[in-house]
Amino acid sequence: MNPAARNAWSLFRRPSQGLAESLSPATHHRHEQVRGIRVKVLNGNLEWALTFMQRKMQSSGIERMIKREQTHHIKNSEKRVLARKNLERKLKSQDLARKLQSILIKKVRGL
Image (tube, rainbow, N blue to C red; front, top):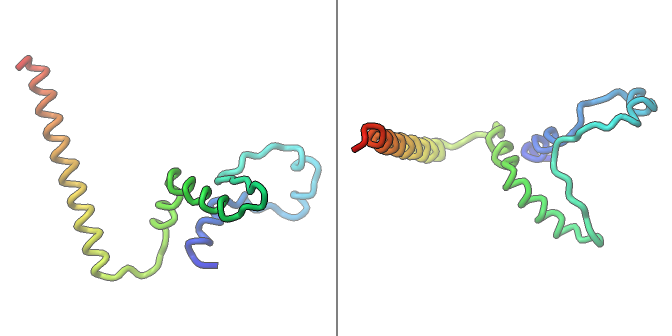
């Protein structure tokens, strides 16, 4: 199992229980909320279920969370590209904040 799949599986797994606890009737009747994504496989169509699950993972942000937690080596060129993108995003956000602030100040002052 590759590291990304292992990280994804750890997100969906229930907290580990001992064998005796999982077989006891007290925990059998208790309704536990399970984190994760559930997809029904209709008519044995596994390909459709996998594509649907992938879309759900992308929209819920789980895919980004898994990628963020990967600990594989990142090349220096990739680091530079990511740093430049983060800097551009930060500068754009600061510029937008300055513009909004100046608009709000003009509104408050009645200009």
